[in-house]
Amino acid sequence: MKQIYLDNAATTRVLPEIAKAMAEVMTENYGNPSSIYTLGQSAHEILDEARIKVAKLVNAADPEEITFTCGGSEGDTMILEGIAHAYAKKGKHIITSAVEHHAILHTCQDLEKQGFKITYVPVDEFGRVNPADVEKAITPETILISIMFANNEIGTIEPIREIGAIAHKHGVFMHTDAVQAVGHVPVDVQADNIDLLTLTAHKFHGPKGTGAIYIKKGIHPANIIFGGPQEHRLRPGTENTAGIKGLGMAADYARENMAVNGKKQTVLRDKLIKGILEKIPEVRLNGHPTDRLPNNVNVSIRYIEGEGMLLHLDLVGIAASSGSACTSGTLDPSHVLLAIGLPHEIAHGSLRLTLSEFTTEEDVDYVLEQLPGIVENLRKMSPLYNERKVG
Amino acid sequence: MYSKKVMDHFSHPRNVGEIPNASGVGEVGNPVCGDIMKIYINVKDNVITDIKFNTFGCGAAIATSSMVTELAKGKTIEEALKLTNEAVAEALDGLPPIKMHCSNLAADGLKAAIADYKKKNGLPLDGLCANPVCHACGAH
Image 1 (cartoon, one colour):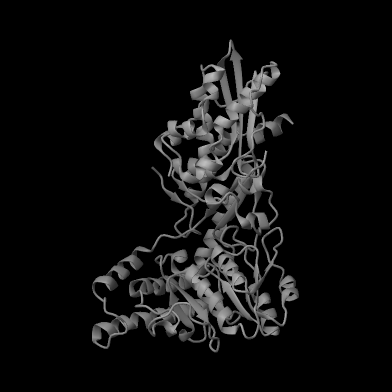
Image 2 (cartoon, rainbow over the protein chains, first blue to last red):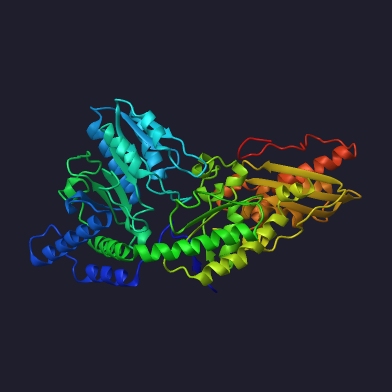
């Protein structure tokens, strides 16, 4: 059966050449980078090379500003807890948004338990933070602003450069969870006024379990993991050299191909959005119509529930995702969809399709061919739909 | 995640639809939870002769609705009242644990339809409720 993978915001396919190079690291260049002999030192070179590549991807001034991690959640936690603990003397207030990833929100909840005060700024109907709201929330106690670069569910790109400028005007550190953005849209820590950033390899065709944080020179988060001197003593433990090799290669690949792939995906994204809105009545696009990731489509289809759609799509070979309660693992639908003002029943009917450079026009046509029938079938058995027709 | 039987009932649901002028109609769940089940029954000589459902909800919600209609068809009211949500889940070879609470309401829907039938016909309700509380979120 046809297999169309449209859940690239969840994770991406590792490029075959990256997987091959990683396997080679594990079997041939397997030394410990901290060891003094040749095999150790050649492993250390992997780290040096990848650090330069990741620094280039986000335009860090110095590769030493890059610290390798095990991924997005670890990076977010290291930065939020690390900055909070290191700078608590200055103040105990952090500003974030209502639509952040759980890696940020749940870390903030942990900090609240430790006596920190967190302000969650709201978003507009498109999921955008208003920089003026951030500025209003700043107090003399504020030490950190953490706003995501782009939203993982609805794809909306946040005005990070403006928020970063506000942070700097008030002497506050600016962090951005750029997990969904890096490798997909240009991210420039210097031009975008970013002091701290989180990224992870598996969102741009690198391996799972490897990420990095950018920490501007002069900023010193406290440790949350303790051990040896690896990764600026911030992330102790023997480095995942194979993963880091893969991250470096994915970073290079993304930087070199971003413009072309972004353009191609934007065309397919817009075709998919237009097609869904035209072929299925009573559907709304979630997220900003233009300020959105080139690979993100998120719609709410009224009167039906997301999981049913996902199961039917899977039966015809399409992998997608939803923000319904069933897929969020709780009884509530996605906090992002609720934050943009959707009522519960409409949030339950959301569908996210996220493209990659492997997505073809044929794939998009196939989705547009299959989805309307699936929606029609589910609506036929939905009391919400049938009562609406009668009423 | 779902058993073969659940997927069968989900992708080929039995007895979908409405019964005009049904003997009884029951509705459980609410759109906030993400599950609404509406069960229609026709009763003749104390036997459920026809049963149909409309459901807004996830795979488990649709599969349990379909299964309860199969289990209840041809049963007497007394037999049908003995059906539990757990028995419906069991007939589907089980449901994932999280679904046992939020989407496994079909037997409640059937009971609500029977309560409605009894009310319409002036029969004693014996503690049956036509508006059972949604277990998952506590709402009517």
